[in-house]
Length: 207
Image 1 (cartoon, rainbow, N blue to C red):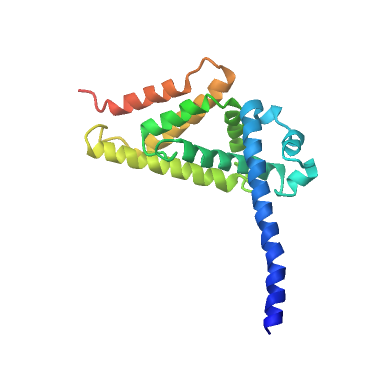
Image 2 (cartoon, rainbow, N blue to C red):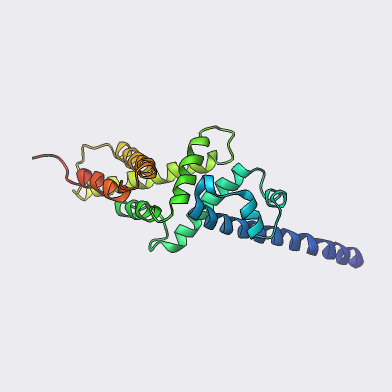
């Protein structure tokens, strides 16, 4: 009995090791892809370049993902993870100022903005690998801003007659819409426009 147990243990070791190596390689691919997309964007980055940078063939690269669409969606998740570690409050949107900071940071990574805008449109399809990611992301962002508006209303800093959910949806719409305008016209200031929108919300009712 003990011999069988020893044999089973020896078999599980390599499997666990292979699994760990696979996870590590996947993370290496995502980190590298994140860097490539940040610089070259959705159109400029190639799977061949990403694969070569991590010592794989293009087929070897896609072995770690079900499709290139899944790879792109996972790159965006990786971006969120990196932002969480880099941002002072963990990258979590807790209010207007945090969202403005995130939008301002996005101006420094045009390739990722392009990737996000492109994949978010494609992910409207229920079958797209990134669909669930965007559904959850929007729900989280809107929920956080909605709660912030409620808190500010209770503190008397925002007009209590405003609908918190609608304000939250408008805020995300402004942020996303300004990303598109900025991609078409680099002089458009995404953060400044979002700040202006929030300043109107904060003014409260006219007297």
